[in-house]
Image (cartoon, rainbow, N blue to C red):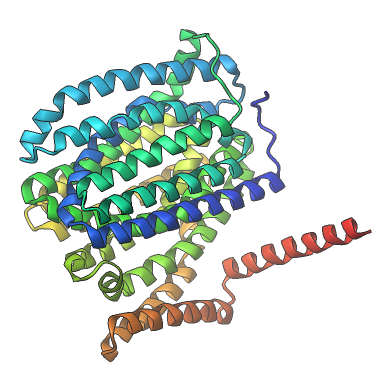
Length: 493
């Protein structure tokens, strides 16, 4: 099996479309599952799961140790690279599981929630799934075969969602969330194992690990710093406030996160290997970056502005009034995730160029700023903490843009000027959509009118002002349609 780069424009577009389909399919099902479980369960239940997720998430990053991205970034990899990483990940997962198993009662006592002991011990099993999947995901990304993730991801989230909802209806409470997450990871691992035709060899090379780790350790530390900063918020909220408040906070962050991950996550997953293959062609990378930022913003900005505008009727209709405290938090996080269109794109360039040292420096800057903002924000309540996350994200986006501009011999203003027209159109649309709530209609009718009005206004303004991203998308679809018709004509003859 070959693992070298053979990336063409057609392959990038095809892989991107499949990745978007996989993301949108799985995240749509996941969103539906979250909505149904939120209606059936209490905010406290979600808060306790978030507490467990703090440790499982950090443990997952340690298991991977940056090796997945190192395998993608490295130009020439072989079976020995993959096998060595596979076995090391399993060993790391085993050690972490033992640690989590024994500290579970301590954490349960700290948060005054006895049920955390068994939950932590059960969900820590997911660490082994992370270890197994990491190499498979690296292979899929290198070969841009994201079609394989579509089937596996969609099937796993659908079946696990059914399991979770069924158990919630049977009054299993928080165990429904535990079963849903564990079932999802189990099925995803099982399906990928038979989808990706790769098996580890009985070889292990310390020299291969050292080479990969020289790149990956900086990404590991960077990811741990960023994740620890975000998880520290959850940790403090769960302890200082309550699991219920943490449930509101996590839901406020999760809804915009799911939407943005569908678009940006898909684009970045495909962009990283594509850019890594062009790491010696700076001008081409610069062009790819500018086009990506403008396109991502055209899709992300209106979705985040629109979501912030319809938050109150949306929560009332989908989650019921017991989740109303999450409304202002959700609106703040919409602003934070809108920044990802620029921030994540810049991070992909830094990684693709092999500058994991700069990636680490950027995350240290975010961590230091974040801790300062956290100490100040906690004095003023939960909304202040959410605002602090946005402020830190804005600072990180600006600093990241400056770093990438210097790497590409560019000016940081070139990244921002292309998104300003889209931002203005989005804000105009959001203001009109938000004002509809004052008409005094029912929550459901208000929500429907807001959504339809938002789409019509945004598309209309994009046409009137001849937004470049909109015309580019139309040209892309027109070109694909012409090629499809041409291929049909050839096959008919």
